[in-house]
Image (cartoon, rainbow, N blue to C red; front, side, top):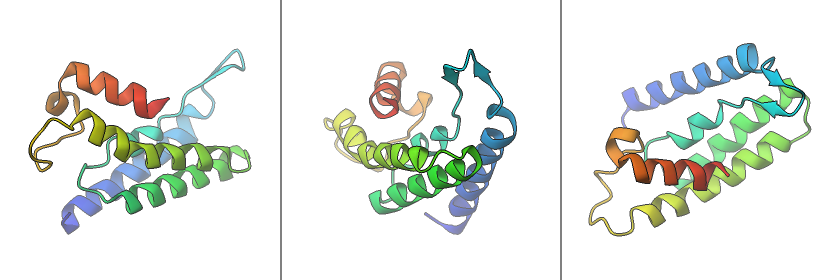
Length: 124
């Protein structure tokens, strides 16, 4: 990734984190359903990002959310596990493709069926 892409991903990190802490923190339905949009940052990181950086960024954003939610590492553990599993799921979904350079983790780049499989496998 070049410096423009790194800056763009950092801006997305700040936007997801800001939305989570300011707006979606108070969006609770019957004390049972919570909205966590920060996982979108983990799910939509570029495919060429190394697994080490994905796991590290997942842990850091989960830890930042834990600081504001006062949840003692729950978000850090869950987002780290999601970052770890993300690489296996992407390789499993795209195992029949020849080159990894053309993989785009988006609805347009993956198609509807693969995109929904990706979101459900990594998200749960």
